[in-house]
Image (cartoon, rainbow, N blue to C red; front, top):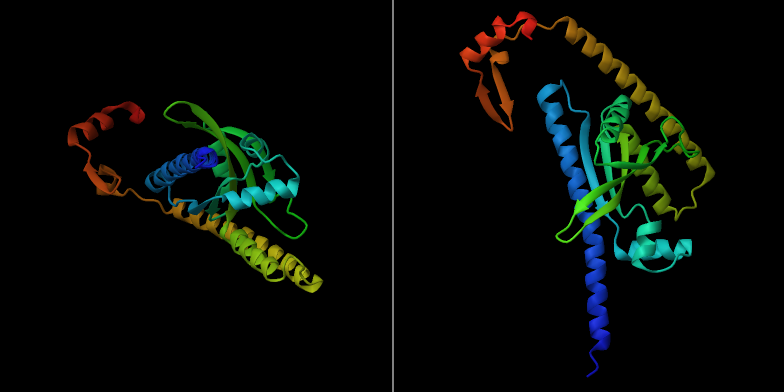
Length: 249
């Protein structure tokens, strides 16, 4: 029996597995970064701007369809050079300001390279789509090498995410041939969602101002710290040391 075809197939399977594994590891590393930011916000801020995240890895079939659609060469180097959304993560936020806040934090991380930013919030798509897209390159350390892998990041509010999900379902149902009247209603729904985002953010800011004005000394609560659900009591000697320092310096 000629084993050459089998060996060729085994090599191809290993190559594509290793190729996609790098993108999976990139998602893992990026999600770890988001988890760290989430925990930091829970410890030091009044609320966490990151509501939830969702990641996905394109299947080999989806990648192949995109290559055919673009008329590109079918090879792993061609895929890496031309298909930038193999690994994707969506971050859903509470308010519009949070989107740019998270974007700034990601841009300030020295190991991330920002390849591209597309702001569909300041400049929505014609159909009403709103979101902030970032193409980010993240280093992945394998057993024998380092790879720089692209991850597509979408950051949007809950209202934007709800609208995008509905729009996707409608396009899928009508096989991308949506009646004009429905397209107009979708656009109007997008405008309503944007108005709701602005109103909820204004209310949030007003509530925060009232809360700050009513802030009190929490006494015993300030003598404790909580890390990863563990409570730590600050020693009295440390508290005395801090109180003896001028202006808490």
